[in-house]
Structures are given as C-alpha cells and as structure tokens.
Length: 257
Picture 1 (cartoon, rainbow, N blue to C red):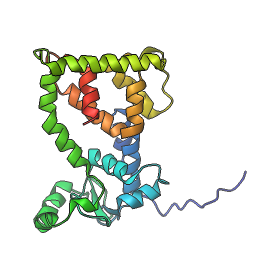
Picture 2 (picture 1 turned 180 degrees about the vertical axis):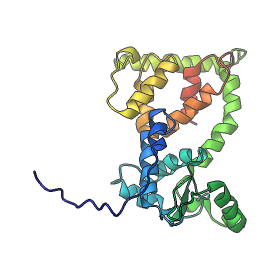
Picture 3 (picture 1 turned 90 degrees about the vertical axis):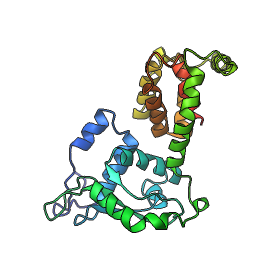
Picture 4 (picture 1 turned 60 degrees about the vertical axis):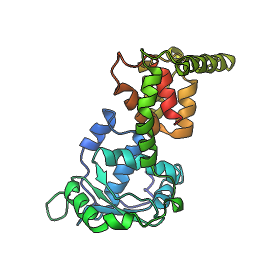
C-alpha cells in the first residue's frame, strides 16, 4: 500500500462537534457555509476560540473557488444564526478576528460569543464609523438591508389584493421568462436530476415554489450562489400563504434586488 504524502499527527487535533454535521443535513447550513465553519474551527486558536482571517485569504485557502464577495456572503448566514461573530468589516481590507460560538477552549471552557460581541462593541463601536465603505467588497449586510426595505413593496405587488399595473407586469415578466425557457427547451422541474448538493437544494426550492422550469434558479445559483437563493426563499416563506399570490415571481424579484 502506497504511503500517504503526509503524516497524520495524532497529537495535533481539535474537537469538532457533530452538531455541525446535523445542521448541514437538516438544511440549516449550506455545504459552502459548513465548509467555511469547519475551516475556521480547525484554524482557530484553541486558547481563545478565535480565528484571524481575511476574505482574500479565505478565497486563496479555497483555491479561489469562491470570490471575496462570495466568502463574505457565506460567513454572514452563520453569523446571523450565531454560529460565529465578527465586527462589521466596512472600510477594512486587512484581516479580522472571528469568534466561534461554543468553541471548546484548552482550559475546559467554551466561547460565549454574546459576551465577546458586547466587549467588541464597547471597544470599537466609535471606530467603525471612521472607515470608508468604498474601500472594501460590498458587504452582504447591505444586500440584506435592501431586501428588508424593498420586501414590503414587493409583498404588496404580489399580494392577492393587488390589482396594480405592477401586478400585471409581473405576470408579463413570468410569461416572458417562460417563453424564453420554452425557446431554450428548458429544464422541467419534474424531469430534472440534481448533480450536486447545491442543485439539490435549488430543485427542492423550485418544487416548493411551484416552479415548472429549473432554468432561472440554476442561472441564479451560478450568478448569486446558494446562500443568496436560500435567503430569498426564506423571505418568501416568511410571508403568510394567503398573502402572496405569485410566490415564484416574488422569489425571482427578491433575487434580483
């Protein structure tokens, strides 16, 4: 048997909770987010449960499979779910610290990110306003804020009670999209076979939204990434069933905001 090109050091290891795998299997983390979290977990300082990273550095660590902006998006969702915490990075190109929730410390304790978050805010809240946002990749938090500000308008547009010309134009948009899909022979949802975890999730979302064709959501996956698609899907599902008339059209518009 051929020897491995590296030696496994049994004295150099970290404790990795199986709950991370459970979060992946249950759909709380995408595979990309899972990969980032495990990578941070492995690289964290075991004394303080903190990793020093940069978006450019993480992009290189993953062989530039993901851009710096995409790395940013992948880290925002676990941060929102309190798997990790780091300060807003507007105006910073350099590395920053990421605190990992419940990280098992070498002294027997565990990281409490709520305590660390309060400590960081007390020390650096005033400094954040001094940075220029034009110097960094676009923060995903900006996208999320825009989604929130525009969501109410979109809900009205696609609601059952809406009879505006915007509602009629959305129908025309869907008809135009479907016509384009038919002209390209399309990818019917019921006949589609996913080839990856990301495509599997998109296929499931398309079924939940009652979509007939996979073309749009697959192009969105390539353009925006799975995290953005799941964010838009959650926004759709947060609305009462009796409120939204065209869930698919509402989902499509959220993606393009």
